Image 1 (tube, rainbow, N blue to C red):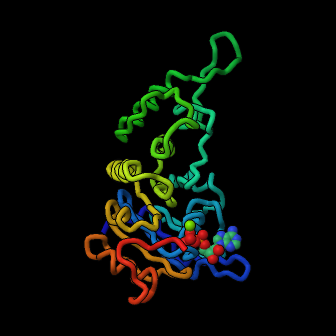
Image 2 (image 1 turned 45 degrees about the vertical axis):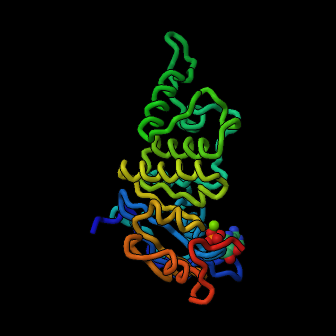
Image 3 (image 1 turned 30 degrees about the vertical axis):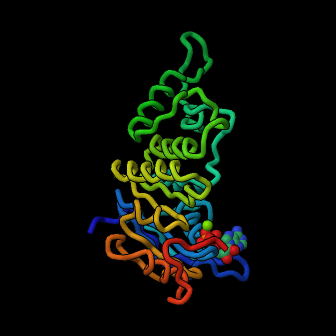
Length: 259
Ligand SMILES: Nc1ncnc2c1ncn2[C@@H]1O[C@H](COP(=O)(O)OP(=O)(O)O)[C@@H](O)[C@H]1O
Ligand SMILES: [Mg+2]
């Protein structure tokens, strides 16, 4: 068994009257793709927001590479190499591809003899090309504003950004929800590329075929509890669906519909 990159233990989180997480354990190894599934309201996003520093747990511990981690903001999480790609992606619509990939990490140089700092566009473009080609992403023009790009291309930019940040864990919360078939394939391929780079990935989606296409392991949450864990190679969509809904009679083959 590989050493876990991240191990979360006994995570509790309450929102008012709602006990969103009831002592959940979660772990992911470097280069492992974990599918996190569960019905709406099961606690998937809450758990991932805790790992990525967007929410604080009420109780529980997080260990990174065996050592206790202190994650109380997204900046803290980033320092540990944890990056979250949100469904809405948080891209800057009016910037082009390098502008987005380097957002907040712009590379500048000082003009000779002057105090002024200037963006090093050449370097950022070259690095952007390298990142995109290492992920085998094709974007016709880097100068294109993100606003004009397709959903799949936008995902690609968001994911390339995590590689620039040298992420060790990338969390993707429903990245394929709004995409068409061909674009979904590209995102699944990007997940495989991240894995090849040794990056750990947590992939949340309602669409079980997508989970089965890329995940090594599947963790199921139900009503804030971890109710099952399976190696993808040792389970079926039927079994996972039963774990999600909690009974055989309600099981729907293949996907679990949004309510
Ligand atoms: N910020 C919040 N305030 C109040 N309740 C919340 C908040 N975020 C999530 N919840 C509740 O916590 C539970 C788990 O939500 P969530 O983690 O978003 O589930 P999932 O991502 O699996 O659909 C739900 O009952 C949801 O309504
Ligand atoms: Mg969610």
